[in-house]
Length: 125
Image (cartoon, rainbow, N blue to C red; front, side, top):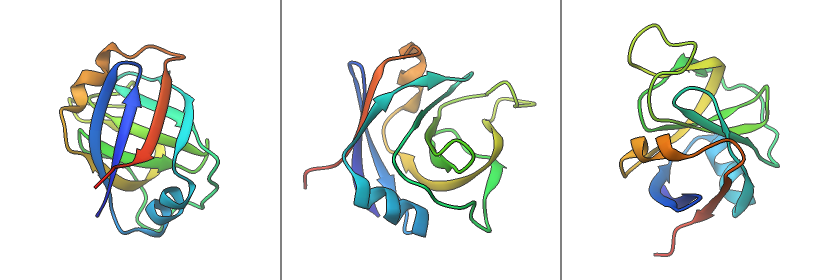
């Protein structure tokens, strides 16, 4: 697993990318800077990566999941239910490629508002 750091405004979270092809492609493009969009308890933002939907893509994800949304070319961070959820678990708008997970408490992102600067970078070892 490759370690990354996600900064959204004043919040900094440690996270890990898995070994999927999508995660490897994102790793090659780091650091990435963008502005957050908020959809329920999900932050997402467009990134300069274009990858097809993976064969194991899914809409139902776990709290703390990191994902890539092929439709919007977006990096997604899930920290609770979204408008598409039927319970307390996150559900993406449409299938996403799961690329990793947040190590720290992802619920800290509830204070992030639309337009907040976001940066994803490789962690320093």
